[in-house]
Image (cartoon, rainbow, N blue to C red; front, side):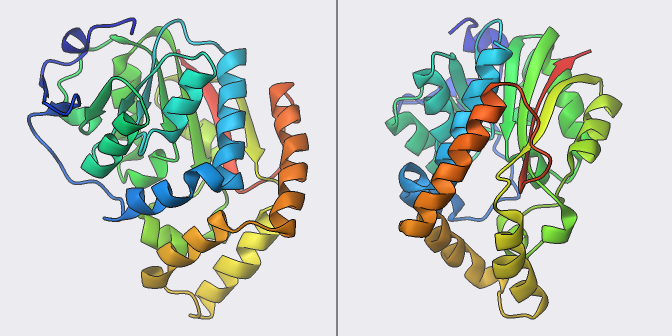
Length: 277
């Protein structure tokens, strides 16, 4: 670690399980069993593998000056991937189940709290990540301003968010999403709150028609309900077979393009890097 946690945040205490907790715990917009569902599929899912590869590649191209704080980091899948790739990463996760899973994966330190509950000092963090987090926060501007204040001058923020409002489905409702983005709308949100965009692209280019056909349209026809979407999504992401192997090969080509700094023109997620301006 390149910062002391108690210097970073005054409202933390370390408990016997080795995890840091905020003295105040607040509610979040995330399904109750979401972490447990993800934990079952993360290690075998093409979606999580590919997202990690793309995140790690941009973290290497835009290397943080110190430790990256993974805000809303869930089970620690991204944080562990970044650590394994040589990028120092700490994790901030408000869900106890997610924090425990991240700690079990070997991520250290793990802070179980929301960002607004830890009493963080302004200008105390070198870099931050919000990987499929911003869409869960109703007050988008407030969240970005908080992270902006937390970062040191010139500090970087790395993000992924779901793409395209027309792909909204029961899965978004189940997951607690307030919005989906385009690269342009994400850039507008970032620049409006004091960030300068350095790189942005779509990822998962093969998936928009698949999501449209198997999630969005069934939702519009009331054949896919939010209460069923969590289990259905887990089955889809965890499924292995010839189709998944084909998608893996296509995504391998996409990952190489991201590693080279090229732009993917469409996809089901946006990936961005920006700097505190």
